[in-house]
Image (cartoon, rainbow, N blue to C red; front, side, top):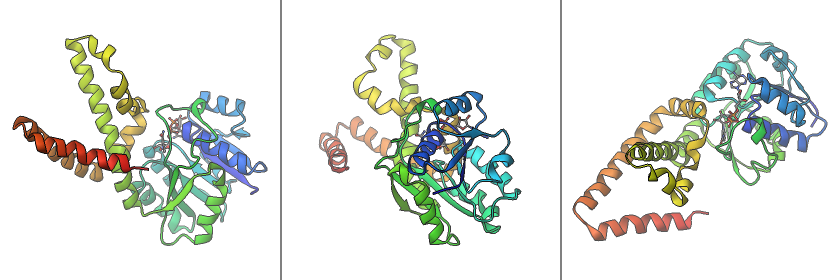
Length: 285
Ligand code: NAD
Protein backbone atom coordinates (compact mmCIF):
# COMPACT_ATOMS: atom_id res chain seq x y z
CA UNK A 1 0.00 0.00 0.00
CA UNK A 2 1.21 3.51 -0.77
CA UNK A 3 0.81 6.46 1.55
CA UNK A 4 2.14 8.27 4.58
CA UNK A 5 2.24 6.49 7.89
CA UNK A 6 2.70 8.54 11.05
CA UNK A 7 3.93 6.60 14.08
CA UNK A 8 3.65 8.41 17.42
CA UNK A 9 5.90 6.78 20.01
CA UNK A 10 9.02 5.09 18.65
CA UNK A 11 9.56 2.63 21.47
CA UNK A 12 9.39 -1.17 21.56
CA UNK A 13 5.87 -1.37 20.12
CA UNK A 14 5.87 1.68 17.80
CA UNK A 15 9.29 0.73 16.42
CA UNK A 16 8.22 -2.89 15.85
CA UNK A 17 4.96 -1.83 14.17
CA UNK A 18 6.84 0.59 11.90
CA UNK A 19 9.24 -2.20 10.91
CA UNK A 20 6.32 -4.50 10.08
CA UNK A 21 4.59 -1.79 8.01
CA UNK A 22 7.84 -1.08 6.16
CA UNK A 23 8.38 -4.80 5.49
CA UNK A 24 4.96 -5.34 3.90
CA UNK A 25 4.70 -1.90 2.26
CA UNK A 26 8.18 -0.78 1.20
CA UNK A 27 6.69 2.04 -0.87
CA UNK A 28 5.02 3.72 2.14
CA UNK A 29 6.71 6.74 3.73
CA UNK A 30 7.02 6.37 7.50
CA UNK A 31 7.24 9.48 9.63
CA UNK A 32 7.83 9.27 13.37
CA UNK A 33 7.50 11.40 16.45
CA UNK A 34 8.71 10.83 20.00
CA UNK A 35 9.43 12.88 23.12
CA UNK A 36 12.79 11.13 23.32
CA UNK A 37 15.41 12.51 20.94
CA UNK A 38 17.39 9.31 21.50
CA UNK A 39 14.56 7.12 20.19
CA UNK A 40 14.12 9.39 17.15
CA UNK A 41 17.83 9.29 16.32
CA UNK A 42 17.95 5.53 16.75
CA UNK A 43 14.83 5.02 14.61
CA UNK A 44 16.39 7.08 11.81
CA UNK A 45 19.69 5.24 12.14
CA UNK A 46 18.03 1.81 12.05
CA UNK A 47 15.85 2.81 9.07
CA UNK A 48 12.67 2.31 11.11
CA UNK A 49 11.39 5.71 9.95
CA UNK A 50 12.13 7.88 6.89
CA UNK A 51 11.68 11.18 8.65
CA UNK A 52 10.69 12.73 11.95
CA UNK A 53 8.50 15.67 12.91
CA UNK A 54 8.51 17.73 16.06
CA UNK A 55 4.83 18.65 16.15
CA UNK A 56 1.78 16.41 16.15
CA UNK A 57 0.08 18.56 13.52
CA UNK A 58 3.00 18.31 11.07
CA UNK A 59 2.80 14.50 11.08
CA UNK A 60 -0.95 14.00 11.50
CA UNK A 61 -2.39 16.31 8.84
CA UNK A 62 -0.59 14.60 5.94
CA UNK A 63 -0.96 11.03 7.19
CA UNK A 64 -3.04 8.23 5.64
CA UNK A 65 -2.45 6.02 8.67
CA UNK A 66 -1.72 7.21 12.22
CA UNK A 67 -0.47 4.67 14.75
CA UNK A 68 -0.22 5.66 18.40
CA UNK A 69 2.21 3.60 20.47
CA UNK A 70 2.65 5.72 23.59
CA UNK A 71 1.57 5.01 27.22
CA UNK A 72 -2.25 4.94 27.44
CA UNK A 73 -2.60 8.23 29.30
CA UNK A 74 -0.67 9.96 26.50
CA UNK A 75 -2.84 8.18 23.92
CA UNK A 76 -5.96 9.67 25.48
CA UNK A 77 -4.44 13.19 25.41
CA UNK A 78 -3.20 12.85 21.82
CA UNK A 79 -6.59 11.59 20.58
CA UNK A 80 -8.19 14.75 22.03
CA UNK A 81 -5.64 16.90 20.17
CA UNK A 82 -6.15 14.99 16.90
CA UNK A 83 -9.91 15.65 17.12
CA UNK A 84 -9.19 19.39 16.77
CA UNK A 85 -6.99 18.97 13.68
CA UNK A 86 -7.77 19.11 10.00
CA UNK A 87 -6.88 15.51 9.14
CA UNK A 88 -7.20 13.82 5.73
CA UNK A 89 -10.84 12.78 5.24
CA UNK A 90 -9.97 9.11 4.73
CA UNK A 91 -7.28 8.87 7.43
CA UNK A 92 -7.20 5.67 9.45
CA UNK A 93 -6.16 5.90 13.12
CA UNK A 94 -5.26 3.07 15.46
CA UNK A 95 -3.39 2.66 18.73
CA UNK A 96 -1.45 -0.14 20.41
CA UNK A 97 -2.36 0.59 24.02
CA UNK A 98 -2.82 -2.23 26.51
CA UNK A 99 -6.26 -0.98 27.61
CA UNK A 100 -9.13 -0.20 25.29
CA UNK A 101 -12.25 1.11 27.04
CA UNK A 102 -10.95 4.56 28.03
CA UNK A 103 -8.99 4.85 24.75
CA UNK A 104 -12.04 4.14 22.58
CA UNK A 105 -14.08 6.60 24.69
CA UNK A 106 -11.36 9.23 24.16
CA UNK A 107 -11.62 8.65 20.39
CA UNK A 108 -15.37 9.43 20.37
CA UNK A 109 -14.96 13.08 19.24
CA UNK A 110 -12.87 11.82 16.30
CA UNK A 111 -15.33 9.04 15.47
CA UNK A 112 -18.23 11.54 15.71
CA UNK A 113 -16.43 13.64 13.08
CA UNK A 114 -16.43 10.59 10.78
CA UNK A 115 -12.79 9.66 11.33
CA UNK A 116 -12.08 5.90 11.27
CA UNK A 117 -10.51 5.08 14.65
CA UNK A 118 -9.97 1.41 15.40
CA UNK A 119 -8.54 0.50 18.79
CA UNK A 120 -5.75 -2.08 18.61
CA UNK A 121 -3.60 -4.15 20.94
CA UNK A 122 -0.84 -6.38 19.62
CA UNK A 123 -0.60 -9.06 22.31
CA UNK A 124 3.14 -9.52 22.33
CA UNK A 125 5.89 -7.51 23.87
CA UNK A 126 8.71 -7.65 26.28
CA UNK A 127 9.91 -6.15 29.53
CA UNK A 128 12.35 -4.10 27.44
CA UNK A 129 11.46 -0.66 26.14
CA UNK A 130 12.67 1.87 23.58
CA UNK A 131 13.47 1.73 19.86
CA UNK A 132 16.59 -0.35 20.56
CA UNK A 133 14.34 -3.26 21.59
CA UNK A 134 12.08 -3.06 18.48
CA UNK A 135 11.92 -6.20 16.31
CA UNK A 136 10.33 -6.96 12.95
CA UNK A 137 9.04 -10.34 14.12
CA UNK A 138 7.81 -9.27 17.58
CA UNK A 139 4.13 -9.93 16.77
CA UNK A 140 4.50 -13.00 14.58
CA UNK A 141 1.73 -15.56 15.43
CA UNK A 142 0.61 -13.41 18.37
CA UNK A 143 -3.01 -12.31 18.76
CA UNK A 144 -3.71 -8.74 17.71
CA UNK A 145 -6.98 -7.56 19.24
CA UNK A 146 -8.98 -4.90 17.37
CA UNK A 147 -11.90 -3.01 18.87
CA UNK A 148 -13.72 -1.18 16.04
CA UNK A 149 -16.92 0.56 17.16
CA UNK A 150 -20.29 -0.19 15.50
CA UNK A 151 -19.98 2.81 13.19
CA UNK A 152 -16.68 1.70 11.64
CA UNK A 153 -17.13 0.13 8.20
CA UNK A 154 -15.81 -3.39 7.61
CA UNK A 155 -13.65 -2.12 4.73
CA UNK A 156 -11.79 0.16 7.16
CA UNK A 157 -11.01 -2.80 9.42
CA UNK A 158 -9.75 -4.74 6.39
CA UNK A 159 -7.66 -1.74 5.34
CA UNK A 160 -6.04 -1.61 8.79
CA UNK A 161 -5.33 -5.35 8.70
CA UNK A 162 -3.76 -4.78 5.28
CA UNK A 163 -1.47 -2.09 6.64
CA UNK A 164 -0.52 -4.35 9.54
CA UNK A 165 -0.15 -7.62 7.61
CA UNK A 166 3.64 -7.47 8.05
CA UNK A 167 3.15 -8.18 11.76
CA UNK A 168 1.98 -11.70 10.74
CA UNK A 169 -0.27 -11.54 13.79
CA UNK A 170 -3.69 -13.18 14.18
CA UNK A 171 -6.34 -10.47 14.28
CA UNK A 172 -9.35 -10.88 16.54
CA UNK A 173 -12.26 -8.46 16.92
CA UNK A 174 -13.59 -7.90 20.45
CA UNK A 175 -15.45 -5.15 22.30
CA UNK A 176 -13.38 -2.73 24.40
CA UNK A 177 -14.96 -4.04 27.62
CA UNK A 178 -14.23 -7.67 26.69
CA UNK A 179 -10.67 -6.70 25.78
CA UNK A 180 -10.11 -5.06 29.16
CA UNK A 181 -11.54 -8.03 31.06
CA UNK A 182 -9.48 -10.60 29.13
CA UNK A 183 -6.22 -8.67 29.37
CA UNK A 184 -6.97 -7.82 33.01
CA UNK A 185 -7.08 -11.55 33.80
CA UNK A 186 -4.15 -12.78 31.71
CA UNK A 187 -1.82 -9.78 31.71
CA UNK A 188 -2.57 -6.80 33.96
CA UNK A 189 -3.38 -8.63 37.19
CA UNK A 190 -0.49 -11.12 36.83
CA UNK A 191 1.75 -8.09 36.44
CA UNK A 192 0.61 -6.74 39.81
CA UNK A 193 1.26 -10.14 41.40
CA UNK A 194 4.75 -10.36 39.82
CA UNK A 195 5.71 -6.92 41.13
CA UNK A 196 4.16 -7.76 44.52
CA UNK A 197 6.31 -10.91 44.75
CA UNK A 198 9.43 -8.88 43.97
CA UNK A 199 8.54 -6.33 46.65
CA UNK A 200 8.01 -9.15 49.17
CA UNK A 201 11.44 -10.60 48.34
CA UNK A 202 12.96 -7.12 48.62
CA UNK A 203 11.51 -6.70 52.12
CA UNK A 204 12.89 -10.07 53.24
CA UNK A 205 16.26 -9.32 51.64
CA UNK A 206 16.71 -6.60 54.31
CA UNK A 207 16.69 -9.44 56.87
CA UNK A 208 18.87 -11.80 54.88
CA UNK A 209 21.09 -10.85 51.94
CA UNK A 210 20.98 -14.44 50.65
CA UNK A 211 17.47 -13.76 49.27
CA UNK A 212 18.82 -11.89 46.22
CA UNK A 213 21.35 -14.61 45.47
CA UNK A 214 18.82 -17.43 45.84
CA UNK A 215 16.04 -15.73 43.86
CA UNK A 216 16.86 -17.60 40.66
CA UNK A 217 15.02 -20.24 38.58
CA UNK A 218 11.27 -20.20 39.16
CA UNK A 219 11.32 -16.85 40.96
CA UNK A 220 13.06 -15.20 38.04
CA UNK A 221 10.63 -16.83 35.57
CA UNK A 222 7.45 -15.65 37.24
CA UNK A 223 8.76 -12.16 38.02
CA UNK A 224 10.42 -11.33 34.67
CA UNK A 225 7.58 -8.96 33.72
CA UNK A 226 8.22 -6.87 36.87
CA UNK A 227 11.14 -5.32 34.93
CA UNK A 228 8.76 -3.60 32.46
CA UNK A 229 8.31 0.16 32.19
CA UNK A 230 6.76 1.48 35.47
CA UNK A 231 5.14 4.44 33.65
CA UNK A 232 3.42 2.14 31.19
CA UNK A 233 2.08 -0.08 33.97
CA UNK A 234 0.92 2.85 36.08
CA UNK A 235 -1.23 3.97 33.16
CA UNK A 236 -2.56 0.46 32.53
CA UNK A 237 -3.71 0.08 36.16
CA UNK A 238 -5.39 3.49 36.18
CA UNK A 239 -7.12 2.80 32.84
CA UNK A 240 -8.35 -0.69 33.77
CA UNK A 241 -9.26 0.26 37.34
CA UNK A 242 -12.69 -1.39 37.70
CA UNK A 243 -11.68 -4.73 36.20
CA UNK A 244 -8.54 -4.84 38.34
CA UNK A 245 -10.39 -3.98 41.57
CA UNK A 246 -12.73 -6.91 40.92
CA UNK A 247 -9.81 -9.26 40.17
CA UNK A 248 -7.99 -8.13 43.33
CA UNK A 249 -11.07 -9.01 45.40
CA UNK A 250 -11.27 -12.45 43.76
CA UNK A 251 -7.57 -12.97 44.43
CA UNK A 252 -7.86 -11.96 48.08
CA UNK A 253 -10.68 -14.51 48.46
CA UNK A 254 -8.52 -17.17 46.80
CA UNK A 255 -5.60 -16.35 49.14
CA UNK A 256 -7.91 -16.45 52.17
CA UNK A 257 -9.12 -19.86 51.01
CA UNK A 258 -5.62 -21.32 50.57
CA UNK A 259 -4.51 -19.67 53.83
CA UNK A 260 -7.33 -21.49 55.62
CA UNK A 261 -6.34 -24.80 54.02
CA UNK A 262 -2.71 -24.39 55.14
CA UNK A 263 -3.68 -23.21 58.65
CA UNK A 264 -5.97 -26.23 59.08
CA UNK A 265 -3.53 -28.64 57.39
CA UNK A 266 -6.19 -29.76 54.92
CA UNK A 267 -3.92 -31.98 52.89
CA UNK A 268 -6.56 -33.26 50.42
CA UNK A 269 -7.77 -29.77 49.58
CA UNK A 270 -4.23 -28.42 49.18
CA UNK A 271 -3.52 -31.27 46.77
CA UNK A 272 -6.72 -30.41 44.86
CA UNK A 273 -5.66 -26.72 44.67
CA UNK A 274 -2.38 -27.62 42.95
CA UNK A 275 -3.90 -30.41 40.84
CA UNK A 276 -6.65 -28.15 39.43
CA UNK A 277 -4.07 -25.47 38.59
CA UNK A 278 -1.75 -28.02 36.97
CA UNK A 279 -4.52 -29.48 34.80
CA UNK A 280 -5.54 -26.05 33.45
CA UNK A 281 -1.90 -24.94 33.01
CA UNK A 282 -0.91 -28.16 31.18
CA UNK A 283 -3.85 -27.70 28.80
CA UNK A 284 -2.86 -24.17 27.76
CA UNK A 285 -1.71 -24.03 24.12
P1 NAD B 1 8.18 2.25 25.23
O1 NAD B 1 8.49 2.91 26.52
O2 NAD B 1 9.17 1.30 24.63
O3 NAD B 1 7.84 3.35 24.13
C1 NAD B 1 6.96 4.41 24.34
C2 NAD B 1 7.52 5.59 23.60
O4 NAD B 1 6.55 6.64 23.61
C3 NAD B 1 8.80 6.16 24.23
O5 NAD B 1 9.81 6.24 23.25
C4 NAD B 1 8.37 7.55 24.72
O6 NAD B 1 9.40 8.51 24.66
C5 NAD B 1 7.25 7.87 23.77
N1 NAD B 1 6.28 8.86 24.24
C6 NAD B 1 5.70 8.94 25.46
N2 NAD B 1 4.81 9.95 25.49
C7 NAD B 1 4.84 10.51 24.24
C8 NAD B 1 4.15 11.59 23.64
N3 NAD B 1 3.24 12.31 24.31
N4 NAD B 1 4.43 11.90 22.35
C9 NAD B 1 5.36 11.18 21.66
N5 NAD B 1 6.04 10.16 22.17
C10 NAD B 1 5.77 9.82 23.46
O7 NAD B 1 6.77 1.54 25.47
P2 NAD B 1 6.09 0.40 24.58
O8 NAD B 1 6.36 -0.91 25.25
O9 NAD B 1 6.43 0.59 23.16
O10 NAD B 1 4.54 0.71 24.84
C11 NAD B 1 3.80 1.58 24.00
C12 NAD B 1 2.32 1.24 24.10
O11 NAD B 1 2.13 -0.12 23.70
C13 NAD B 1 1.74 1.37 25.50
O12 NAD B 1 0.45 1.94 25.42
C14 NAD B 1 1.62 -0.06 25.98
O13 NAD B 1 0.52 -0.21 26.86
C15 NAD B 1 1.39 -0.82 24.69
N6 NAD B 1 1.86 -2.22 24.68
C16 NAD B 1 3.03 -2.58 25.30
C17 NAD B 1 3.45 -3.90 25.25
C18 NAD B 1 4.73 -4.34 25.92
O14 NAD B 1 4.92 -5.52 26.19
N7 NAD B 1 5.66 -3.44 26.17
C19 NAD B 1 2.69 -4.87 24.54
C20 NAD B 1 1.54 -4.45 23.88
C21 NAD B 1 1.12 -3.13 23.96
